[in-house]
Length: 196
Image (tube, rainbow, N blue to C red; front, side, top):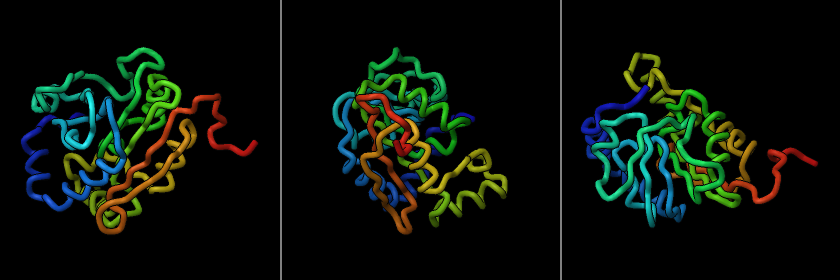
């Protein structure tokens, strides 16, 4: 499902300025640069990423509403339109819960990142106050959250850790309702975090 109403999306952030500021500050602390932002929407949070940012989203409407100084690509998280080992950074901010196949996205991210490249995923965890609210909204038929798949913090970190080296995690909002995992593509063959 694509989000196709950038005005509604931006209104939500405008009506929740404290949440936006706290999330933005957390993303700034990740110190990201020269990223492809997957599931970018209308370039929300891109002011916290230094250097060049490329927006990638399924929705043409969202991309069209994004920042005019950025390159924009309409595409899928499950088939990233980049050659192998060519990117320094991939971010996905408040989007992975809407991807149909998180593992497929992570495989694609690993494919296109250079060895040592950065992966930053920020999400609303299932085991947070906000995550529980969104799950209930989905059960009640909310047009966005009925299609979302929320993971706990441990589940998200575990999924990422199968293919990437976890550098750290951080939280914002009450009860860790906005959770970021910072990881790197291994420079050497990686055993997925399993014991040798």
